[in-house]
View 1 (cartoon, helix red, strand yellow):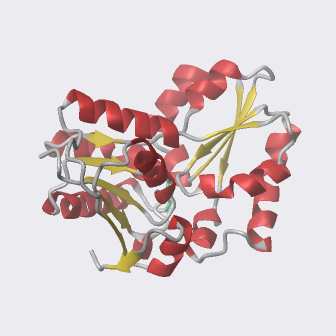
View 2 (cartoon, protein in one colour):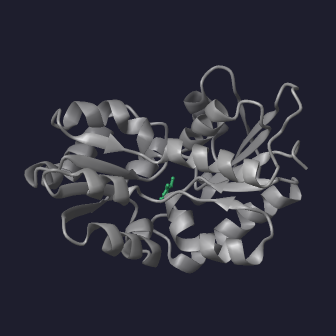
Length: 259
Ligand code: DGL
C-alpha cells in the first residue's frame, strides 16, 4: 500500500504549487496529479457542480489506487471535502485560506484575502473567518479572471498586472499587513504581488502547511513509501498539458487525458 501514489487534483494547473511543496518534503513518494482544466474555473460554479467534479476526480484517483488524496484546490476543499471524507475510505488532505495565522499576527488589525467566489461564499470559510477574524477588518476579494488567465498561460501578462492592481487597491487603502492567498493558482503570482504591494505586507499561502500535514497523515497511517526507488510522477490535464508542463519546469512533463 505504501508504494501506491499520492493523488492530487485541482480545477487546473494551480495545484502544481502544492505538488511542488509535497514533492519537496516527500521526494520518495509516487504521485498522480489531475488538472481538470476543461472545467476550470471551479470558483464560479455552484456547490453542487463543484461537488460532482470533485467526486469525478476522486473516483479517477481511487481507480489508480492512490493511497491518499490531496484536494489541491481551496474551492473544492471548502465545498466538497466533508462529503468526500464521509463517502470514501482513504484519507483526504485539503487546503483552505490561512486566515488564522494572518488574524493572529496582524498589527494593523486589517488583513486581505484573495480567493475565488466559491471559496469565499462557502460555509467552511465563513465558519473559519468568524472563529478567528471576527474582531479585525477582513478585506475579502474575489480574484475573478485570475485563474482563467493562468489557465491560458498568461501568468506574466499586462492583463494580469492590471487585474491585480484593481484587486489590491482596496486592501492597500485599508492598510493591510497580511495578504492571504486563498487559491492554489495564486502562489505563481508571487513576484507580481511582491512588486505591487507595499513592503510591509506579508503574503501567506498554505502550500507548505499542506505538505507537512500530508507527511503527518502518511506517517500516522504507516503509509510512507520506504522503498528507495525512483518515484514516478504522472501529470494529467484534460485541457492544454503544455501550460502545465511550463509551470512544472524542465524535469517534468504533463500529458493530455480526458478523465
Ligand atoms: N486552484 C483553485 C483554488 O484553489 C482555483 C479554483 C477555480 O478554478 O476557480 O481555489
